[in-house]
Amino acid sequence: MTLWQIIILASIACLAIKMAGYLVPPSLLAKPAAARTADLLTVALLAALISVQTLGHGESIVVDARVPAVIVAAGLFALRVPFIVVVVVAAVVAAGIRALT
Image (cartoon, rainbow, N blue to C red; front, side, top):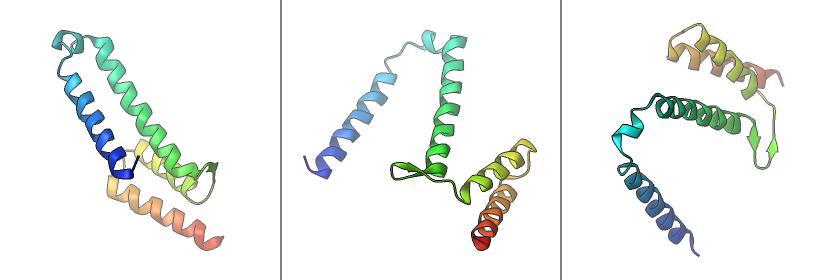
């Protein structure tokens, strides 16, 4: 299979999954358990994406300047600091650590 065939098949699969979502009865989505599951799943997927992008390098785990920067960013988010300040401070932390190593 060529790359374009795989991309087209993946696109069709995504469209099919999206269309299947319209077949779910609204009464099922109105239940608190479904809403809570959707909320928790969103958080879990975002946390997994952040972990993979921060620690992953190919098939190995790498701990470099990104890890302290993400920890600082998480702390600033917990303090409800504005997003742009979080980004700038995390970038400064990562750049500072890279400059020292």
